[in-house]
Length: 361
Ligand SMILES: [Zn+2]
Image (cartoon, rainbow, N blue to C red; front, top):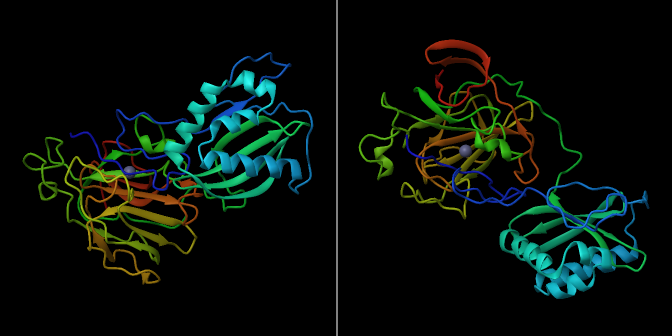
């Protein structure tokens, strides 16, 4: 089978844009830098380590003026790439922990991947850290900064931003059917990284990538060079259950197979909201093929549009997942069970298919 498609990481919510499962260097999900602490005798900076060893707990939820001033300057200097000034705002311990070249490297990487800060809002204190919900051009992060008594930064970390008051949904309770009529093959699906590279994305961790394959396992008829050569291209995609259409994106061009569009990552998209507030997310529809409208109430089995190859997708396929809210930036993925499904010809009920299984209603 061809390498795969991909889509994912729609809004770059801390996981950044993944293009293909292989060969792309991905940045860490969280980059955390703190000054060394006496308790641990740390002498270097750390990446992907959570440290909350600061003694002076702060319980108030009003931003202190020292934090505000430091955070304001950080933003200005970050956006203007004045990284020397940011380094100068570090405490001595922090400077020792994160020398100038490492500071620049970290900030340059962040800037390259996430872009400028466009909006920043104080949320709360986490231990000694003032935590800011921070919109970058291409990502939404919590930027946490702690300052010492001299108003120098002695702790700084950046991690994906999580709304704390979002509904929790472990699995769908609405009974759903597969969103197509023929037998399709699961390319990515399951709970482990080997079965499903989506697992690394919070919103898409339970997603499926689906194609149609022949008995040789190929998803295309001849050489795979055109979209029309793929079995899945142009196939009807149908509503898995009753619901309301809450988002439609339809104008994005189909890709030439093998050349993804990393700018409009999900490509043409439909989101259906169910009566149980599950958000069913479909990506990569064929351009101008979507026949439903935002706000429209739909019935199970109703045509949504046609399978395509738009967005960050390397061949025609359907990406489908369920999330707990509409906004991909803050959503958490919901495990997806189909009510009654044929797996390799056998009927299963309340089942969540995995990689390589051939599935049909
Ligand atoms: Zn996908």
